[in-house]
View (cartoon, rainbow, N blue to C red):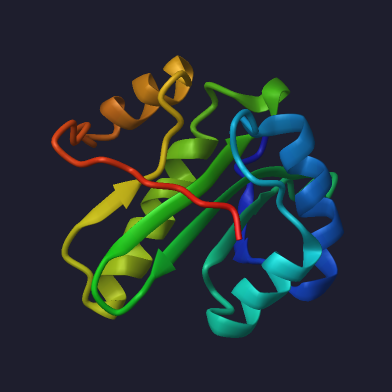
Length: 142
Protein backbone atom coordinates (compact mmCIF):
# COMPACT_ATOMS: atom_id res chain seq x y z
CA UNK A 1 0.00 0.00 0.00
CA UNK A 2 1.25 3.50 -0.73
CA UNK A 3 2.13 5.76 2.17
CA UNK A 4 -0.74 8.02 3.16
CA UNK A 5 -0.70 11.71 2.36
CA UNK A 6 -0.61 13.93 5.44
CA UNK A 7 -2.45 17.25 5.45
CA UNK A 8 -4.35 19.59 7.76
CA UNK A 9 -8.10 19.09 7.89
CA UNK A 10 -10.47 21.59 6.31
CA UNK A 11 -14.10 22.26 7.17
CA UNK A 12 -15.46 19.85 4.56
CA UNK A 13 -13.47 17.01 6.19
CA UNK A 14 -15.19 17.31 9.56
CA UNK A 15 -18.14 14.92 8.99
CA UNK A 16 -15.70 12.26 7.78
CA UNK A 17 -13.44 12.88 10.78
CA UNK A 18 -16.33 12.42 13.21
CA UNK A 19 -17.41 9.20 11.45
CA UNK A 20 -13.80 7.99 11.43
CA UNK A 21 -13.43 8.57 15.17
CA UNK A 22 -16.58 6.50 15.82
CA UNK A 23 -14.85 3.65 13.96
CA UNK A 24 -11.20 4.00 14.94
CA UNK A 25 -10.86 6.01 18.16
CA UNK A 26 -11.28 5.01 21.79
CA UNK A 27 -14.27 6.95 23.11
CA UNK A 28 -14.92 5.42 26.51
CA UNK A 29 -15.37 7.82 29.41
CA UNK A 30 -14.98 11.02 27.39
CA UNK A 31 -17.34 13.73 26.20
CA UNK A 32 -18.70 13.31 22.70
CA UNK A 33 -17.02 15.14 19.84
CA UNK A 34 -19.10 17.40 17.61
CA UNK A 35 -18.83 19.35 14.39
CA UNK A 36 -19.10 22.59 16.38
CA UNK A 37 -16.08 21.67 18.52
CA UNK A 38 -14.02 20.76 15.47
CA UNK A 39 -15.08 23.96 13.70
CA UNK A 40 -13.89 25.93 16.73
CA UNK A 41 -10.57 24.06 16.67
CA UNK A 42 -10.03 24.89 12.99
CA UNK A 43 -11.01 28.53 13.54
CA UNK A 44 -8.46 28.87 16.36
CA UNK A 45 -5.68 26.78 14.81
CA UNK A 46 -6.29 25.68 11.19
CA UNK A 47 -3.27 23.34 11.14
CA UNK A 48 -3.93 21.51 14.41
CA UNK A 49 -5.99 18.61 13.04
CA UNK A 50 -3.73 16.46 10.87
CA UNK A 51 -5.16 13.80 8.60
CA UNK A 52 -3.61 10.76 6.94
CA UNK A 53 -5.41 10.05 3.67
CA UNK A 54 -4.91 7.05 1.40
CA UNK A 55 -3.85 8.55 -1.95
CA UNK A 56 -5.38 5.69 -3.96
CA UNK A 57 -8.85 5.81 -2.41
CA UNK A 58 -9.00 9.24 -0.69
CA UNK A 59 -10.07 7.29 2.42
CA UNK A 60 -9.23 8.76 5.83
CA UNK A 61 -6.87 6.31 7.54
CA UNK A 62 -5.54 8.33 10.49
CA UNK A 63 -5.82 11.50 12.56
CA UNK A 64 -4.06 13.42 15.28
CA UNK A 65 -4.73 16.77 16.88
CA UNK A 66 -1.44 18.61 17.40
CA UNK A 67 -2.47 21.45 19.69
CA UNK A 68 -0.17 24.32 20.60
CA UNK A 69 -1.33 26.82 23.21
CA UNK A 70 1.75 29.03 23.05
CA UNK A 71 3.29 27.29 26.05
CA UNK A 72 2.84 23.56 25.66
CA UNK A 73 2.34 21.06 22.89
CA UNK A 74 -0.55 18.62 23.27
CA UNK A 75 -1.46 15.54 21.25
CA UNK A 76 -5.04 14.31 21.13
CA UNK A 77 -7.16 11.92 19.08
CA UNK A 78 -4.38 9.87 17.55
CA UNK A 79 -6.38 7.24 15.70
CA UNK A 80 -5.57 4.82 12.89
CA UNK A 81 -8.11 2.84 10.88
CA UNK A 82 -8.34 -0.66 12.42
CA UNK A 83 -7.48 -2.30 9.08
CA UNK A 84 -4.35 -0.14 8.67
CA UNK A 85 -2.80 -0.42 12.13
CA UNK A 86 0.82 -1.51 12.55
CA UNK A 87 1.73 -0.02 9.15
CA UNK A 88 3.46 3.11 10.47
CA UNK A 89 0.58 5.54 10.00
CA UNK A 90 0.47 6.52 13.66
CA UNK A 91 4.23 7.13 13.61
CA UNK A 92 3.90 9.33 10.49
CA UNK A 93 1.20 11.39 12.19
CA UNK A 94 3.16 11.81 15.43
CA UNK A 95 6.32 12.72 13.49
CA UNK A 96 4.36 15.38 11.58
CA UNK A 97 2.88 16.71 14.82
CA UNK A 98 6.31 16.88 16.45
CA UNK A 99 7.74 18.70 13.40
CA UNK A 100 4.89 21.19 13.70
CA UNK A 101 5.70 21.72 17.36
CA UNK A 102 9.38 22.30 16.68
CA UNK A 103 8.47 24.82 13.95
CA UNK A 104 6.42 26.93 16.40
CA UNK A 105 9.07 26.72 19.13
CA UNK A 106 7.60 23.94 21.23
CA UNK A 107 10.03 22.10 23.49
CA UNK A 108 7.90 19.37 25.06
CA UNK A 109 4.80 17.47 24.04
CA UNK A 110 2.30 15.50 26.03
CA UNK A 111 -0.26 12.99 24.86
CA UNK A 112 -3.69 12.52 26.38
CA UNK A 113 -4.24 8.76 26.65
CA UNK A 114 -7.06 6.97 28.41
CA UNK A 115 -5.79 4.96 31.38
CA UNK A 116 -7.24 1.67 30.17
CA UNK A 117 -6.12 1.95 26.52
CA UNK A 118 -3.24 -0.55 26.62
CA UNK A 119 -2.73 -0.52 22.85
CA UNK A 120 -2.18 3.25 22.94
CA UNK A 121 0.14 3.01 25.94
CA UNK A 122 2.39 0.61 24.02
CA UNK A 123 2.40 2.86 20.95
CA UNK A 124 3.28 6.02 22.90
CA UNK A 125 6.07 4.24 24.79
CA UNK A 126 7.47 2.98 21.49
CA UNK A 127 7.54 6.59 20.32
CA UNK A 128 9.60 7.68 23.31
CA UNK A 129 6.81 9.12 25.46
CA UNK A 130 6.96 8.49 29.21
CA UNK A 131 3.92 8.33 31.49
CA UNK A 132 3.79 11.12 34.06
CA UNK A 133 2.25 9.45 37.10
CA UNK A 134 2.92 12.44 39.35
CA UNK A 135 0.43 14.57 37.42
CA UNK A 136 -3.28 14.18 37.86
CA UNK A 137 -5.65 14.78 35.01
CA UNK A 138 -8.83 16.57 35.81
CA UNK A 139 -11.62 16.50 33.26
CA UNK A 140 -14.94 18.29 33.13
CA UNK A 141 -17.49 18.24 30.32
CA UNK A 142 -18.62 21.77 29.57
